Length: 252
Ligand code: BTN
Image (cartoon, rainbow, N blue to C red; front, side):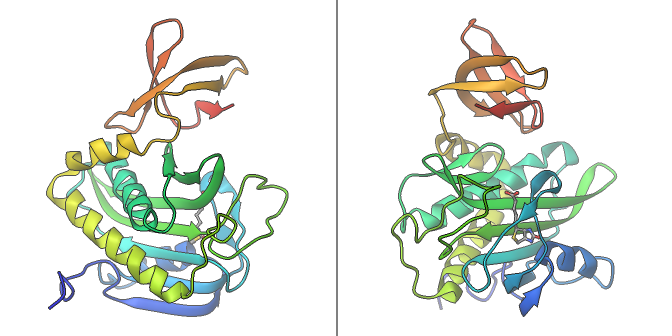
């Protein structure tokens, strides 16, 4: 029997659509009814109203890419530790894709980059009850065969643009789901075991990086790590260490 095949959580149930507005919206809607099985995956060839982070739109050409969402119940995670879910997902994606394309990094908090180009995006929508996570919808958009992108996303890339020809989108999805399953198990067992890998995969880690603060000023420093609450730890050029929250800074 192949490893953990029968006990896989992620991908145990796969719901496929030719066309859908947003797999995240569909998954969130499923959560309002009967409790769907943990690990249910919703996937579509053509997403017409894909959602990105901070209210943006996720553009994905029909039949060219992977756009899917996973329903998880990470109720073992305290709300204050929810960033560990981001870590597990980002590390799983990079680990699954690295054999195809080495050099992929995680641009904090969880964009997937190759050099200075964005290959994939992750949108995690958490539901919290009391002190713990109750349910999460993990949306992943991976650019596979798209070669033209709208001007709003000038730094987008795809596996094909990076020289990787994927024969089967379905096969690639299976590889990624298996990677996500492994890392979700790791998260359940010992969240902190993801720390070192996430840190090593951080984009621009220990490289001089300029950030723009919300007041428009810029600072330069070296990315060191991300703390338990998901803040970016930067050693500033003035010798001080600073922890930035998401939305507080933009890379420049
Ligand atoms: C980002 O802004 O980087 C996050 C993009 C997430 C896009 C994926 S595509 C599948 C899933 N369904 C959505 O509507 N969004 C996510």
